[in-house]
Image (tube, rainbow, N blue to C red):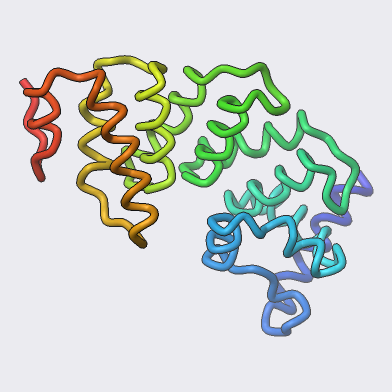
Length: 205
């Protein structure tokens, strides 16, 4: 009860003093940027772990997906708190269920690498597929790589190829990596299906 009361007090502090710089912690956009550059845990440590209670409150009480991701990763990696992977993974799962592509991609990464869980690339496909369907480029790259390695359902190969082929890339290096992944996946598909998947609009029968 005391822990819940402290968390609620922290939430009240966030709401009452949100205009002050001291509690105006990372916005969702800042967190997305930190996650995409893989700097989110380093940022928490660079802030001398001063924001732990705010992060926990936003994750556990306010149930904000980006903060569930961050708090879950802090627990998974023992950053500023004692490691608690079972709770950390549950928070990532909750964030993914709320539609966070970042959480979906991270869960896929854990199952792809076999970190904290039994290695299961097919389950990684299940996590990353909806994020790819919603346009997340990182998810599309991971999905096509997993498909090219033979995981997932061949019935989904065309969609995965289509999504990545018709993406816009941030730079030449990213485009070259995508082209390599597409070439690997194309080797597992009939030429007619590859040609159809390359069209701007996908029409399947």
